[in-house]
Image 1 (cartoon, helix red, strand yellow):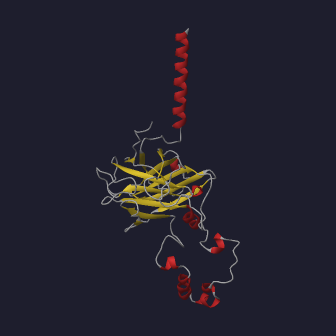
Image 2 (spheres, one colour):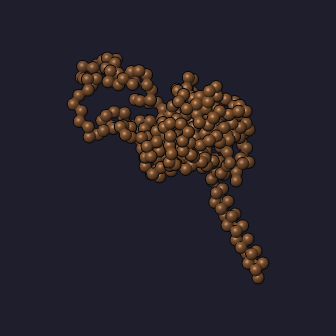
Length: 299
């Protein structure tokens, strides 16, 4: 009798376990992988809701607080980010998804912005650089997306009137009627009241992309990429969290069935995360599959 009961329990356990596997790999949903797997696609969608993402393999990257350099983050916020990736052999698109109860995309004093980033070594080598933004002589490439830049790309104007609708503005000199007939003079006048733009600071003002390309050789060394490749990004907020696609050039020397490394970072504005205060991953193995080849690393 006891043996029969034990057999029944074992059978139920196997059935339930099979059910879990079926749910995690059900039809139309990509398998969960132990590494970030890039599959081939002639179509590289910038839209996080494009159907192509449904069957792509997904990796759940665990995140930890950045507590190594100042300003440190000592309290955990985002626990993980879901990653999917597709490539056409020239460029690669990564989709990052994470939970976030509050949408933070308004800049201003004492305000913090939601964001995310993808980081890869500048070149594939046996010894990878430190995952904490690389190290001297071993640089990393970072593609950084911000929610306020996405709002600008979506049509929100980067102006006092848009950001502070209740503000009372009497007059801006660069909006004077005589200047309307001279766009060049008007543009020069605008620069006098926007010193950051006048100095070439491309992090503020009108944008043509929701992402920026950066390079680093360790904490505190972050700078604009010397040879940007035209990376793009698009993020959507669904009330529970963000889905963001970051499209960039394929990492150097990465080809089908070769491996490299990749790392991720997430900023939650609602937790006052900015700069080095962020949630981050360590290096995650990155594998590019050949066209038509399915992942062998699903579990």
